Length: 110
Image (cartoon, one colour):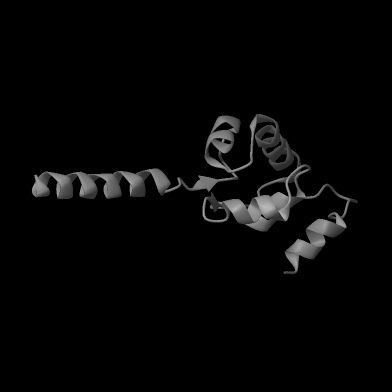
């Protein structure tokens, strides 16, 4: 009986570790459904806003730049820091005659 209880306990610990392990999400390539499913406090509307921002402004270079998306603050970024990756980020290309927003310039110098 004691061996069975120990086996059950080990199994529960292994399953809990699997459930608690968050999938890493590349915010430069993830689709709306993945962003919605994997990121904390990001629903379908904010996930779509991330994709729209990325389409309009280019790839994110850091997790902190996610805070430039309307409706997403630094608290949300911090809550998701261990889940976010920005692999394959390309520089944001600005049209000629347009400068980066002051917020983006500030983040670029951090």
